Length: 183
Image 1 (cartoon, rainbow, N blue to C red):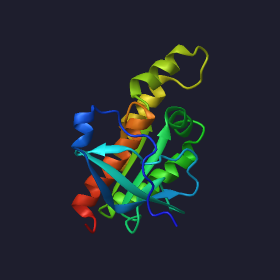
Image 2 (image 1 turned 135 degrees about the vertical axis):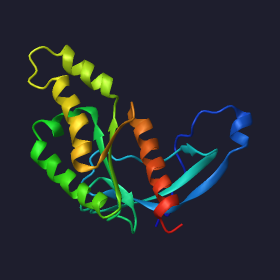
Image 3 (image 1 turned 30 degrees about the horizontal axis):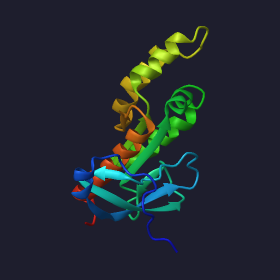
Image 4 (image 1 turned 90 degrees about the horizontal axis):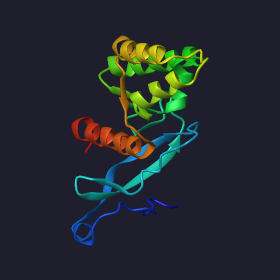
């Protein structure tokens, strides 16, 4: 049984800086939902001048794509690619609303829930505006971004790209663990 894997790709740092890094084993295990289709590996994460070794386990989560083992009812992280966000707000609207209702229950019970998008809002809107004849417009996405977090109390965080989204998700979990976890 593998408890943790050493990162296969490390951040590119000057040798002087790399020598000053500490390897640090994360105090919690990241849970990844069994239905997650493009999972983050949580490898090669450089946070707080530490290179983190993160344990991951696949499990069935009631809502969201990621959480911390033992804290699934208090912390929910939902991953969305840019195109998946557009599809979830439009064609998959009913399913995404039900997911937000489950995340809203987590928030109402004192927990934290967020959607982390692997893209920037500007890039998503620009792409929609450039495609003539699309039924989905940037206005509909902006409307959802403005209203859904207010309605459900679920934060939407736009990370710019996939790697930054993965790093942001880890930082959200680490911050939550430091404030609310068992560590």
